[in-house]
Image 1: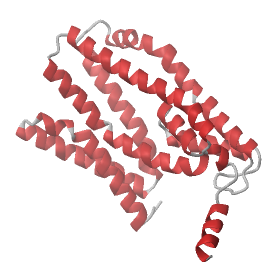
Image 2 (image 1 turned 135 degrees about the vertical axis):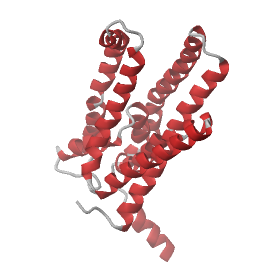
Image 3 (image 1 turned 90 degrees about the vertical axis):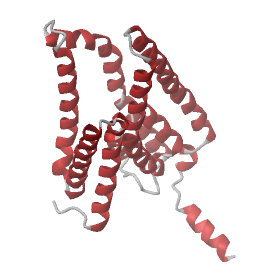
Image 4 (image 1 turned 180 degrees about the vertical axis):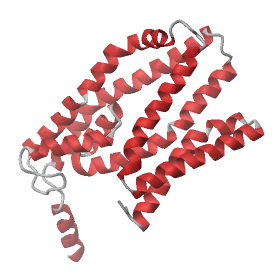
Length: 253
């Protein structure tokens, strides 16, 4: 009897809208979206291999490149997984699966969902969120991310010509421009994290230090496989250090 009572109390804490958020129909509705993402990944993988062959790259070089990309994706995958756990608790498994498969940014999805439910006077985590408020949150997340998809679809075909114009016809500058763009992207994201708090600052510092150490070891031993693990290792270590600082000392600013 006690066990039944505890189960009932725990079950009653689950918001009513979660019946819809985790329904089988919503799972079925999200399958086509995720399937398109997987199909795109397969097509890009196949095209990348074919284009690499046309450029004269060997199978060993192509395998090395793909392995580097796979390892480098481990760090961001951990961050997305942690964000998905938070998103599942608020909007349910199907929507979290769909949204993070398409966009992959919990930093956007959670605030968007919060904006949606706030129009009805609720906040994420409230137990009495209505179905209408939940539906509004899902629409806010979906429509809010449409702009990124449109920019990618319409702007990507012109990126290569823009890069060549920036290089001003000098092929030697193209790798420099590409590297500078990547460094600028990393710097842009880090610039917002460093002043955010002690855990964020510690995470960035630890990740950067690990990156330098791993690259130094790779250069010293001329080990390409070590270099391939550099970015993924730095991201994972930075993530763990940030969590450890948050749990132990918290944020000092």
